Length: 285
Ligand SMILES: C[S@@+](CC[C@H](N)C(=O)[O-])C[C@H]1O[C@@H](n2cnc3c(N)ncnc32)[C@H](O)[C@@H]1O
View 1 (spheres, helix red, strand yellow):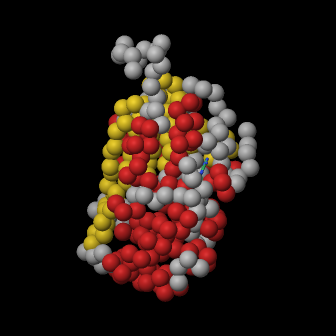
View 2 (cartoon, protein in one colour):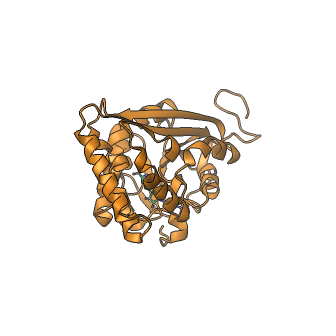
View 3 (tube, protein in one colour):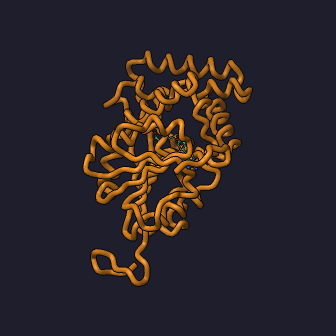
């Protein structure tokens, strides 16, 4: 099943203009982003029951950076990799997950046909999360889990030393994403979005990734200046802003005492049992 990629469907995500180096640069960035925090995310996903029952629908799987890791960590869990961008999704091939090209707001899957849904760094890019969550709820079996992994630009973490002079650069980036229909402050809204979308048992689990356990350079997908280059190309950020960010990132990398903690959010919910259905524990909900 395939659907054309449109700006309306992808919202603020533009694979060729997210970082420098075009599509190849973005493939590398997605890979580095998954390598940095996937282990911690997986621990929480397992705790929250996402990997208990398949198939797991990875909605917005992109290049498969997480699909491959999920398949390696949970070889018995069937995973379906779905994305609106067929070209990007092609990179997820070869790891045993069927690839489906579709808009998350119009899933070509039967009602009640999946055991779990994962949305990682997807909702911050969609214009309206509600129809995507409604579709996730429809395709989940009663009792199935949804897990959303996201960030919030005002609670992104902590860097020491920090550079207050970069505040306007980061504000420009958030503004650009908002202008394109995305929301880098989605983290604080997730629990209410899931509850409002009809999910039960909504829980929030923050997670932290630090350079105590990863090299500082591994934080480049989040802290490095690469993602600012397209903003310079579009005229949203002056060259001086990019130069400032690049200089501070170099200083940070060279500082043996520099410490960084990246804060992420995992929010989970459960597809409710209908009035005539009973949960495994025997209670109706
Ligand atoms: C930042 S990437 C994250 C990719 C992957 N989840 C990961 O963590 O590596 C966002 C992905 O969401 C996809 N996406 C955005 N809007 C979508 C929609 N309406 N339906 C399906 N996928 C969508 C994009 O095409 C892109 O692959």
